[in-house]
Image 1 (cartoon, rainbow, N blue to C red):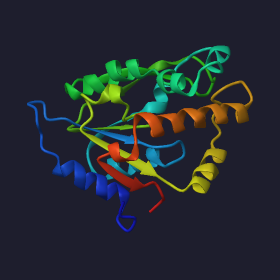
Image 2: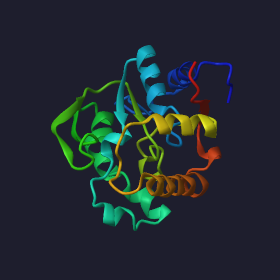
Image 3: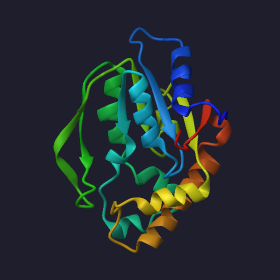
Image 4: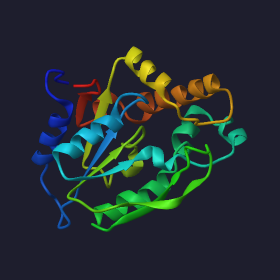
Length: 205
């Protein structure tokens, strides 16, 4: 990781260096990393430099009962916290075919359910999928460039404490512990650091 270079510029350079292997010619970039690493901000910076279609993994947080969610093991959490099947079918796969993607998002304002209105994302030569677990193995056939976004733990904690989201109606400290355990399992057992094509800093530049 070259901390002296702008992270967004590094990713754009890597995108431009990728060969277009298929007739459709769409490059899918997964921006993965721990919560609070700066993935969303980085995706916005990339979008300022390049014409891209951005998909936010948080929009596909799975709507499920808290009583069911608290029973999940870290491994189960990686599989079930987000509806990656719907993310794949309704967003990423359509965009790789240069089709318009339309989907309803998790309703973060209410803390449950999906929004009434659907989000529309127009196709582009480059699709940026940002969010934890975005480089999961189930997307291997769709993702062309896997990017790990890293930031110091203390900076992550500051960013997470500033969030106003209500992700669960149970004790937030208990939720954080379960969420962190799932992330650790993912990055230690599913997607190791060496699995990524590029590693960048999530620090503000």
